[in-house]
Amino acid sequence: MVNTVGTQGPYLGPNGANAATQTEIAKARSGAAGQGENSSKTNDTVSLSAAAQAVLNGASARVDALLGERGDAIFRNALSGARAYKDNFAATLEQPGLDPDVARDTRMKMLAREREAFTAPEHTGDVLTRARAYIEFYDSLSEDEQNSERYRGTRETMQAIVEQESAKAGVEAPDLSLSQSPFDALLNALSDGEGGIAERDSQTVVEQFRARMEAQIGSEARQREGQDLESRYVTLQALIEQARRGDDKAYARLEALSEGRVEIAPMSESGTDE
Image 1: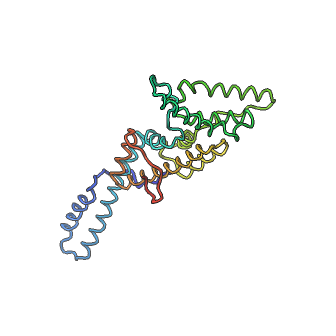
Image 2: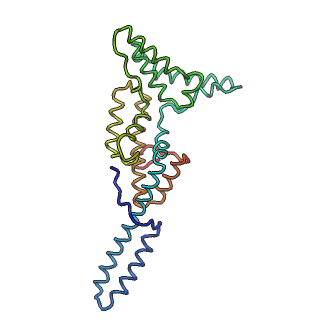
């Protein structure tokens, strides 16, 4: 489970600890008449600890509320930047009046991307292997590009071919619904179990994600996407913990992520998102 400091207590704001501490110190001093100086110092220390705990409790409750309301959007927006195939080449080519040079360059990039994904030599050994590679490629495209004129309906066509070839060979057709993009595989790992998308133990999520990917073809682009996703996920978990500890900048970043106003970068070598 994601560690929470607590869920009770008011949010005191960035200066809440100081304000609460001053109030408690005043109370301690007013009630300390006739007591020694050491006793007053002890009361001050206890009050500071209670005030700091109140800040942490309030910050944690605030993060819990945000994740409960917009956790799905936060995780989806934070992880979506890792997609292996971000550029919508098909839509670019469908633009009316496209400059011929731009069209030629875009078409070359699109063909190179397809060659890497499903027409490279390692994908052309048999129909089933090539079909699975194609479907993995298709599932890694953005939804807009999947619905483009070039790719619309091709997944269903390829799956039908797989079923026909399997029937001819007298073997059971593979379950191509398992051929998920790394992005979808991680979201599914996050969504499994009880407690909501933000209440999963992070190591369990990563282990389930890796297990989902092991049975797939795994082109170089998809391997890069999987590694990028893991790094972004770790970065996002660190950001959530910062917000739980009362970091207002981290909380504001989570809010912006929920609205798609910022992106999150993979963890850098320095241990922070770039």
